[in-house]
Length: 220
Image (cartoon, rainbow, N blue to C red; front, top):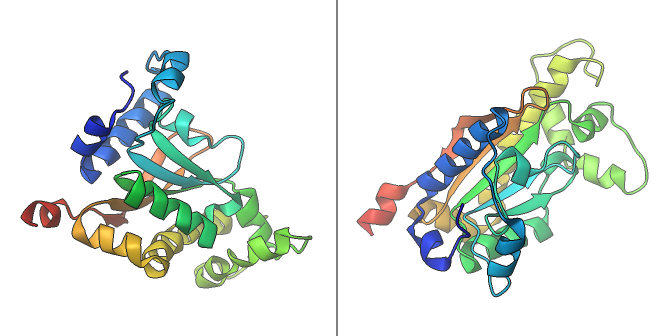
């Protein structure tokens, strides 16, 4: 697998970027990881990096984006925070990745059995974690279908909240970053949300979050 160059990155469209991630996840779940010389990639990226995607995921030790999507050094920007929430620092990092460094797609990646989501469902308060979990609370309140046992003991409730949180984050990125919103609308970049199943290794992307306006980019 070749190390990404600026020219290779420029030739990747948002749609192609998503397909690269989907193909990588297929390799991962089939245990067909591409043979890479990571030390060589470290050397080849020492003068610059040209990742084709930026992925916002959870800090959970089982959810490394590089492994899930079978990517090497220099291929993706990886932002990790409990509950895959956004704040000004994360939005700024995304703006750097896309506007400055040339990444073509933003992925918001939740995962099953998320501890942060469980904490929000249980309204946990503990030190600085309290403020973080507060950012997940809107997803908890938005989930209306589970009437009884709205706690972490209800696995169905937890997973529904997790999905809502992913979709709210996709929307929030566009709402809170004029730079990224304009790039999405113009077709320069795409955005999508999804969930990683920690049991099967499969990433399920949500079509109702997917925005890729490549025709707009070509028309311009």
